[in-house]
Length: 213
Image 1 (tube, rainbow, N blue to C red):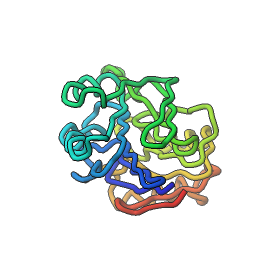
Image 2 (image 1 turned 135 degrees about the vertical axis):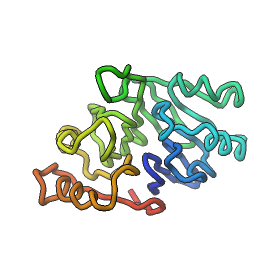
Image 3 (image 1 turned 45 degrees about the vertical axis):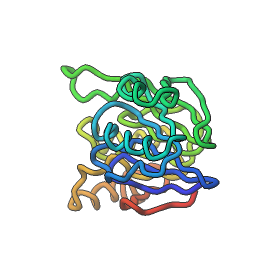
Image 4 (image 1 turned 90 degrees about the vertical axis):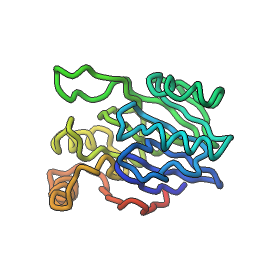
């Protein structure tokens, strides 16, 4: 399986000639979902879900399908009948030849005064876990964790503890569009071997870079 990083929280997985894209949002490239056979969306925030990008991908490929939570499905289902599937925690399904399990229920707390919305994470082929905007621990072994490294709702100490708890073999940064180049070495040091220690390999891919899993 080949993993390609797209802008911000979006990743692209390719296997056996088929493509699955997770979270092609407004901070990702306009073409982030292009060519997808299946799209997964973790929640409704615009940096993870951009209706225009998603609609273009589904229109370009009449066989492409979308799996997501109810708040996003309700915005897309009428335009693509039979191709939009609503999922929640505990569900499992096949999408474009990938086996997917759903973990998690709620977005991380941004502030006590801001109501929490639904957020789900996806474990793909029992290997790659994308938690969306939450530090969800799936409770099963994870080989490659897409770690939301910088967001208004987290701090680096929480990311360190999250990596320790999940214990993946490798962690790859996502949710990084808000992280400036000046701050990147600080995060790399904190999450790398010179920091407090997370017991896992930490990688950062530039948009467009790929990693064979």
